[in-house]
Image (cartoon, rainbow, N blue to C red):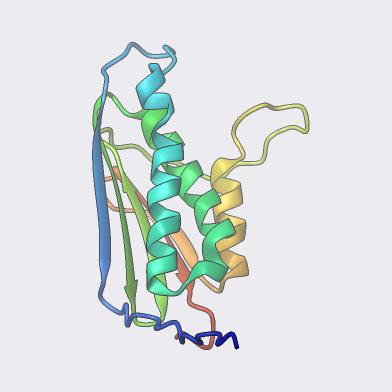
Amino acid sequence: MTKTAERTLHTPHCDGDVLSARFDIASRSSGEEPCGEDASRPAQMRRITAARLRYWGLAEMTDDVLLIVSELVTNAVLHSAGSQVSLEMAVREGYLRIAVSGDRPGRPEARNVGDDAEAGRGLMIVALLAQEHDGAWGVDDAGATTWCDLALPKERA
């Protein structure tokens, strides 16, 4: 006789919980490509993010959140003056906030690019995903942090 154990997965209460990750990046000249380690940072941040979403019981948001994290971290690595980039995610009051900071203030803007363009769509993608999730995106007053808020799925909010 075989007995199958049933286990109920517990979804941790995550309101107010924060993920914070920070990494150094190498200084480089304007237009110079990031070194191999820096170029791998978006993939590392995606893995950390996916694990935290599972822990928070928000796995159904994984695809869209990973795309947003990838775009924001890539922009920070590419456009930072070199030093440090940080990723912070928090669940508060029915929203997931994703914030990526670099050390170079600026005013990133979503823009329309031509069909043949190989780059430049990242913030447009972030804006569309935020809108799809009843959220918003923006840049802090100093211009060094780009953030995105996504509404939690209704059963979690």
